[in-house]
Length: 130
Image 1 (cartoon, rainbow, N blue to C red):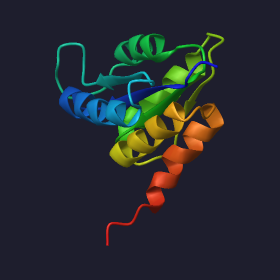
Image 2 (image 1 turned 60 degrees about the vertical axis):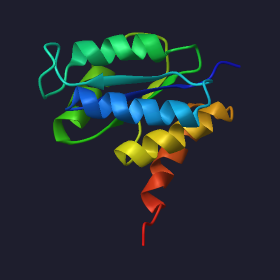
Image 3 (image 1 turned 90 degrees about the vertical axis):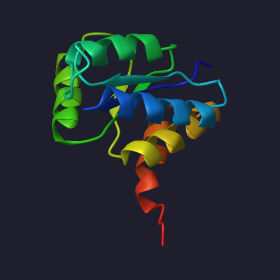
Image 4 (image 1 turned 180 degrees about the horizontal axis):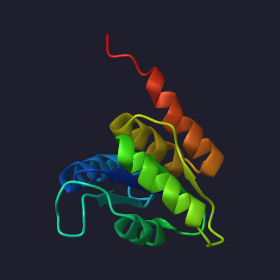
């Protein structure tokens, strides 16, 4: 069974790449975690073209879970999903960015399907720090 891929959408390329690096560690090399951060020219913002490319790269046949950071990242993800014409199952998780990415990668590495990975990402809201 193919693992679920994960795409991290952020306004910052550095933030997306850093979170992806951390999540890949939790995916023990078994999960594709791709960043889609910033704009094409490296500035702050979001890009539906970068998101589309990251989804293609993350898709290993098991579906793809999107995790977004702030406002327009969520809007970019929703716009992408509305226009999605591919057969791949792609969903947007309601999850905290870093904690959700780590939880999602761990679940995907354990063989969870898209629904299971999405649930694991969302459950990261319950990780208390105090």
